[in-house]
Amino acid sequence: MAKRAPKRRERTLRREQDRAIDRLKDDRERLFTLEPGGSTERPLDAASAAVIESHALSVPCPLCGANHELVEHSAHVKNGVRLRETKLRCRQCGSKRSLWFKIVGPSLN
Image (cartoon, rainbow, N blue to C red):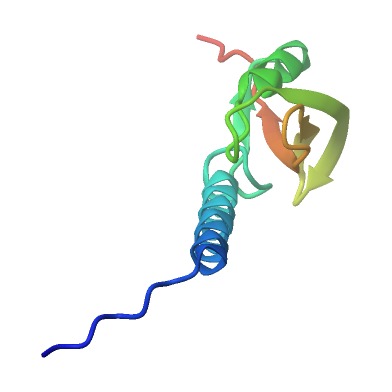
């Protein structure tokens, strides 16, 4: 007669689920930094500084999908390129992140 697998405790199952959720959150945050705007190497293009804040606030939180709150909007120069950084904080889960923009003026014909 084959032996049964021991019944797993409720606490063990809950801890495994919590670890899986934490790994998923880490993966989502890592994907956010690899997308355009997630780092200084891959900034989003913006026509002017006036549209940066509204665009940054329209990006949902990668962890919970809620709206962000704008904490700071600052200008930086990296490798001779003028960049804008918007520091965001999620209204629901409180996670913090930055979104990077490069201002590209309208192209002349």
